Length: 155
Image 1 (cartoon, rainbow, N blue to C red):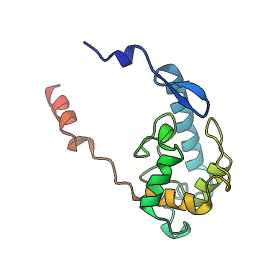
Image 2: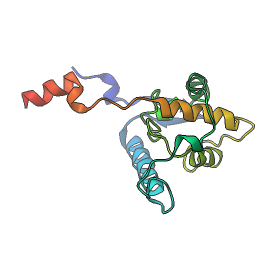
Image 3: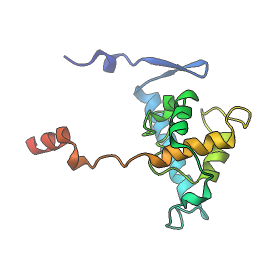
Image 4: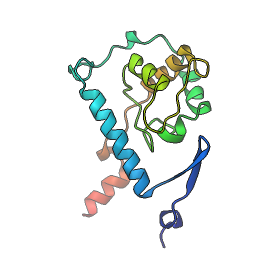
């Protein structure tokens, strides 16, 4: 017997309107977010397009513990997942975009993300969130996940 949630996608309330969870709308939103991230990373002049990762020194120092609390209290997890792994919003960690790009995007976002002005989230708040995102561990390799290892061994 299957999971009933797969048959009838739930609705989640976020920012004053209902958004479907799962289904075609989620797939389209995810595809758009991924396309935007790929385009951003390929822009000339960005550190990633030049083949080098941004230096941590470019971001102001932040508090990882406070950043994790802010990530939750500002509702970032609702779209980006509790571990910033992505959901209806793009994956943010463990290697976030450069701090200056994060700051610019959070202040003037595209798509469904609401803007967070300096009155709502200070630059220090965003530095703390950036520190949290930068501290996230790498996800496990597929070969290190027992359930996946069992499934591929049976095939």
